[in-house]
Image 1 (cartoon, chains in turn orange, red):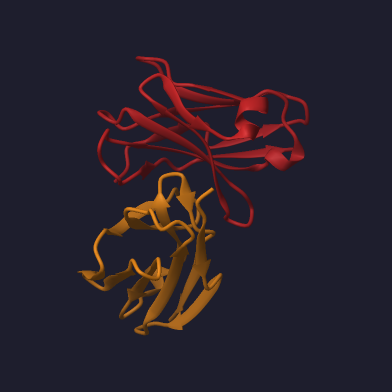
Image 2: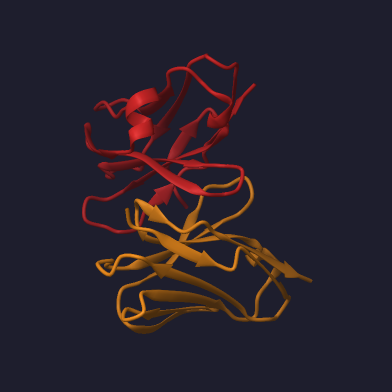
Length: 106
Length: 113
């Protein structure tokens, strides 16, 4: 079964800092990655998707995909306390990473 | 904001009891997913539907869970005989036929005592 390895398990950054999250797929046939964010007590919400090699920027969020290495990353610049949440990557609706807990300290 | 509605938000059952939860997917979303999120935040796909038909499900779902998505009624997920290990957040999600983005509800938190 396709697997997605996500790292780190947890991450703490100061307010205004850069947060970097990573995912690697075990299946070369993946078509895309989605990043989801889940605040406490809520269901996950989609942040952004990436289908092509390179960078995709949406506001403070930048996703980077390297299909050759099956790796995707999410970078959050100017991190805010409201960014504190659980972040998941997904290579399909059936395959999610185990999540990264991001804490942004004021 | 997601319009996937899940009820109840919280459910407490004794071991061996049935536990049933419901989900109304977003309008126009024929594909529905159920997931289990454990206390370590790990996601496990359980089953998915397209309209009323089961597309995929894992072994655990086949054996102890029953799920359906009847037309004009909420989808449901039922655990036939709850076990302590079933305590988790159960998330329902839906998407349009050809989209890749999945929209989640807020979940039903099941506690088996």
